[in-house]
Amino acid sequence: MALLLGLLMLLRTQITDRGGLGSLVETFLPWFGLLIPVLLAGALWRRSASAVVALLLPVTVWLNLFGGLLGDKSHPDSDLTVVSHNVDAGNPDPAGTARDLAASKADVLALEEITPQAKSLYEKGLAKSYPYHTVRGTVGLWSKLPLSDTEPVDIKQDVGPLADTKPADVKMAYSRALRVTVATDQGPLAVYVAHLGSVRVFPRTGFWTGSRDRGAKALAEAVAAESNERVVLLGDLNGTLDDRAFAGITSRMDSVQEKSGDGFGFSWPAKFPVARIDQILVRGVEPESSWVLPATGSDHLPVAAGISW
Image (cartoon, rainbow, N blue to C red; front, side, top):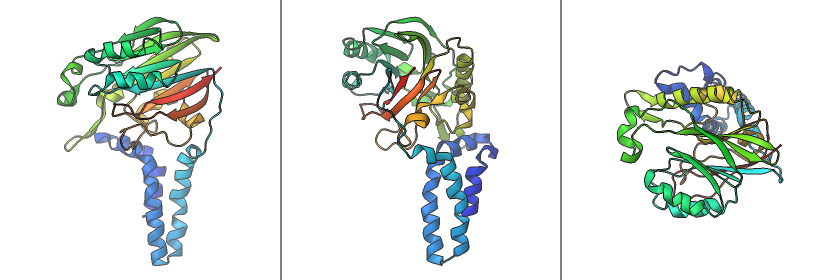
């Protein structure tokens, strides 16, 4: 069992993605480490030296994959603080969420899953702290710095089999990604805000990721074509960066959590986070720190990062 666990993590990319099986394994990959102390207890109970030795394989593989996340790699100073938050279409207190986010004192704030009914509440609640903002569909960016060149990004979303799981006001086709230029003292910064399609586990079809995967591919193409050398991507990607679906993005951008975080930075669900599906990625700037903010009225936790030039 120890050898099988180690080989499962080591050869995870060879697992078929039919029915989303590969993505499902990669999404919860860090949690496979919990099986190691269980197997160790069994080995000690059986007084089996060979079982203890066999555990070296999964321990080594897990530490190689995630050991770098265990230490604190943050630095205290940064030029710009950014925050991303899926505010939840069913949020019972949008005004309170706006107050909580304004208190974060972020320079740039990205929101995802903004409903038409809640839009004015976020605009009113954030107006004092953020004089500049832009909204396209269900995503928006609030900033203390001037914004320009706002345009929607086509990430090829569709509702698919999730039609009955979304509120009526977010079932229609809408813009779920945008690109905007933020004017900083160090020069222009290209910022992307995205909310990729949802994923679900269905009894017959397995781990459904079709819309999310198409969006990830389109978003990767948009980032690849970006002419500005300094880029930040903020959003709910509905997947962890261990998932093979994001290879096109992670090959071009760095995760702030991996480079400057302290721990795994899980962001969903808010009551008991088990995965980091809310991401901040950068290119051409240096991540200095990464952290998770306290819960708001959303089912996601806000994620934050400090970046420098």
